[in-house]
Amino acid sequence: MGKSSFALAWVLDQGTEERSRGVTIDIAMNQFETSKTSFTILDAPGHRDFIPNMIAGASQADFAVLVIDASTGNFESGLKGQTKEHTLLVRSMGVQRIVIAVNKLDMVQWSKDRFDEIQQQVNAFLTTAGFQSKNLSFIPCSGLTGDNIAKRAEDPQASWYTGPILIEQLEASELTQRALDKPLRLTIADVFRGG
Image (tube, rainbow, N blue to C red; front, side, top):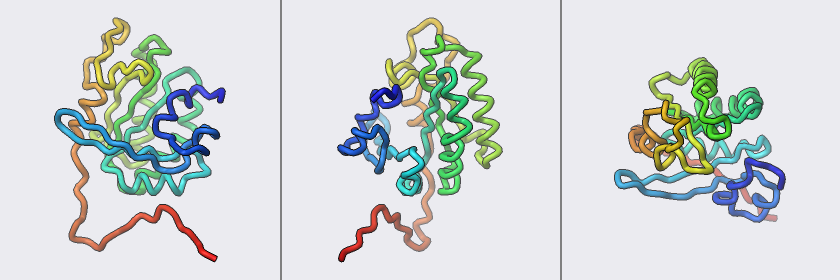
C-alpha cells in the first residue's frame, strides 16, 4: 500500500474496500476489558470523504482518543489539516474530554522536547476550540511496541515520563452523564432507497 499509517489499520478496517483503499470508511466497533473497566472502541473514519460516518461515531462517544503522529513532518501537516477538523467535529458533537496519545515518539528517540512542543501546540489549539485544559491528557507512546499503552516504556530515553500510561488514563476517565430524561435522539448511520 505504501502508507506507513496503514501498517496496522487492518485490525479495525475489516471491509474489503477499506482494506484495499487503505482508508476507514465505516465505523468499526470493538471491545476490550481491563481489570477495572469494559471499553467499546468506535474507530471513526478520518478521510474527508467519510466525514458523515465520523460524525455518527463521535456522537456516541463518552470521550475521544486523539492519536497524534510525533514523527518529523507528520505532526505539522496533521495539525494544519484533519486533526483540527476532527477535534472541532467531536467538540460540536458534545465530546468534552480528549486523551491525546502522542504516538511514534520512539521514532524521535523519546524526545521530551518534541513531546513538549506537540503538547503545547495541541493544548493551545484545543483550549481555543473550547476544550478545558483539565479535560485534556497527553500520553507519549509507541503503538508499534506498545510502550506506554498497556505497559510502561522500558527504554531509558523514555524515563522522563512518569505519568499514567494510556490504559490507566482511560480507566480514570469519567463517563459522560447522559440526559436520560430528555427526548430520544438516534444516530442514522445508513439510508437505503428502494426502487
